Image (cartoon, rainbow, N blue to C red; front, side):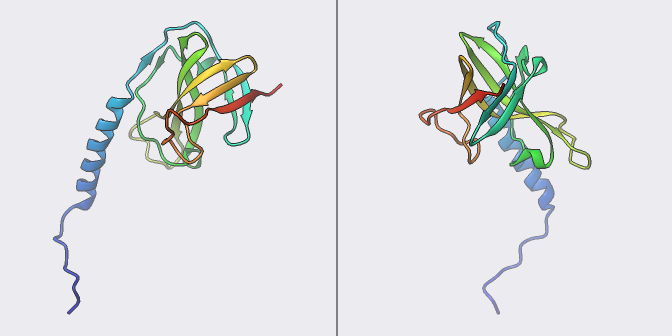
Length: 151
């Protein structure tokens, strides 16, 4: 007889969902909503060799950046993604990616905001901190990603 033992029959989907919900609630507490406290806006398209190009419109500049949470890894494969920001003054912004699930995707949570980052505007460049090319685990000491304005 092998050393493997049968696991008790249980509803693993329910248990896993409860664990994910608990983890999600703990994660959201660290990234609460942020109200606009500055008057600046970012508009235009900016490009970076590592992160591609990001386009900011007037709709990308929010008065209230909602609570940030988990969104899927490589979210553009599962729906629409755009960067959104809110001004916190002195050329600084707090931001996140807005994820809207695509057709056929699980949309019970609606629009989600995740992968938080900060932006510092420097002339025709924006410096993005807190976002890693490998995912959202960037450290505060990591150098910022530099995006140049695309004419």
